Image (cartoon, rainbow, N blue to C red; front, side, top):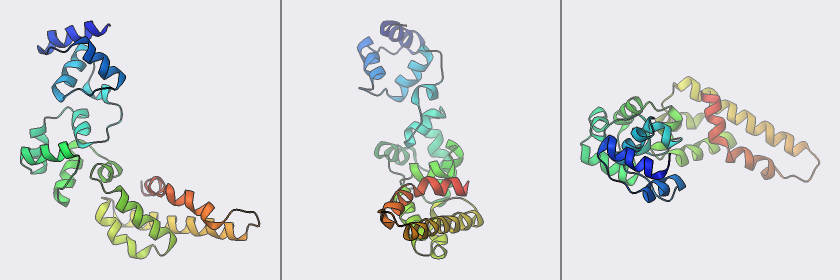
Length: 201
């Protein structure tokens, strides 16, 4: 289909007039369609809006991927539509624990996606680095406050991170090469979030 065909399809399906040049800009990643434009584009291409998004990373993209109206998500999580819309616009979640659990349910988010979309990855990574390099036991409660998983799974994951990190450090210290402990420990700590999710899930 040419860009003109897609443009005409959007008009025929949704009565939405979009220039072929705009379709080209979306295709090249130079512009992003609005929610209404995305629905019309999907209809013109005979696919679901989620098929056009790739992997969602923001509140708005997760909602679009589920083909939910903003008002429906706001109602499900117990927020006024205007407040939820502001969170989407700013890509900054400020809901409480109950609202966060409702958000995860309505958008079908995994625990890792909840942490990412609510902007708590950096804080979780700080806790995990400390748990791995110092003592893991004091970090069970703070990590449990961020991650919606059973406490036993969090304890096992933190204990395993601690064991892996110290095993790595011990092998580095006993090795007679030129690598310092930081050379070995740095990469482990840099990918600690990924390793935590592997262990926890």
